[in-house]
Image (tube, rainbow, N blue to C red; front, side, top):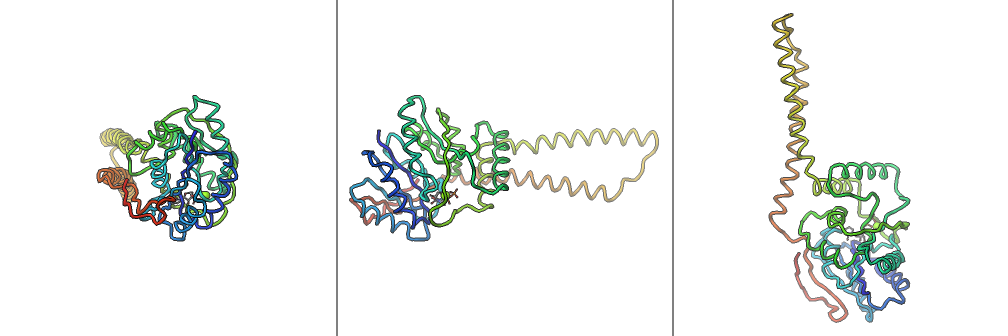
Length: 321
Ligand code: UDP
Ligand code: MG
């Protein structure tokens, strides 16, 4: 079985060599293995380090893809999967938070279970703040209620996929890629394997709270149309309420007479409904904006150059996808 390791790298200059050396230790006996490092527009010397790695370990099959700018981890994973040739494709971070020894375990599992198409690692114990754990739990329960596909809480992008799964993922052409949803969408038999996340070796995580929030919104919009239906449901509800209130006023007028309704009530109602309309417009706008971007069919990433041992200088390829 040939294995491809897809490694997205953003500002990982200090991690490239330790990561690769750890892999060498783990995959000593593995003959047919390719390493695909994707430099996702790093601001540091990451691509230089990838070049040095290819030069130093010239007898290994290492490929370096260099993006023209930062396109995000999702794009890097896609580029790596498209480049990969292995029967099994592993997606793994460059920062050694995900120990390559688990890839070996995943390979063993797929070898022993021909019916299984994919192994996904999940964190049994999260080493995160209580607040973040709470928000992630809320997100999964919300997205599972809103979406038709099932999202496995805590499952990460750290996975081993058979070639048929990779091919299906590559066929998904969307610009806004939310891999957690894409993995669920394509289906296949998935085994969830617990793993222990380790500390980042060097550098810092590229996620911020705002980034995570945007990512969560992107996930919901990419995999559910239900937020668009909120406006209809609420509109029907308030319409019904207004009819009941109208009837109430007519009856009141002809029985006990009518009081003048207070000014504050009117102001509150205007603000309430005005605000709600804006929120619903915003939700529609989010979907519309994405449809607009998707319709442009812009490339999801641009590869400035590709290097391997035969081509260390990496002539410009300008490959798009
Ligand atoms: N990464 C990437 N492009 C980005 C951000 C991150 O390729 O725009 C890579 C990064 O180099 C790492 C992996 O994605 O290999 C996970 O990123 P990070 O460690 O920042 O995320 P965390 O582990 O904190 O979830
Ligand atoms: Mg990390």
